[in-house]
Image (spheres, rainbow, N blue to C red):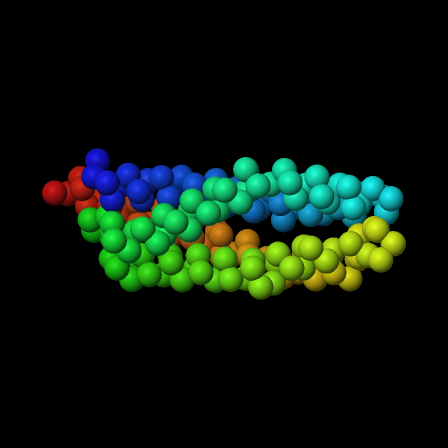
Length: 155
């Protein structure tokens, strides 16, 4: 296995982990926030935020790094446009998180300390775009991996 194939395999594995994680958050974690009482939401949300650093944010950083490094270490039989598309998806994801979803998450608390239903509904509605970006990149890495592996068997 070459260095570029290893990078693709690692990035694909992490991207699929991210796909599972983002769907779990969208379909399970976020919907449960409605049931956290007003007096407990601030503590709950802070504990949730601290808990995602290792299991969500660190893998996401590694996936983005893999997308960037693939510009230089492009696996054999993977077309350049695929790598650039992957990088574009990651840039949109990071930019959307920094500009929209991150700040929105930080403002979910209402003045009385509970969950602001208006902001929560906005998060739930717009987070589907984030789910699509993460899922799209996961599918793209599977495609790149399949092309690379298939071509290797034909050589």
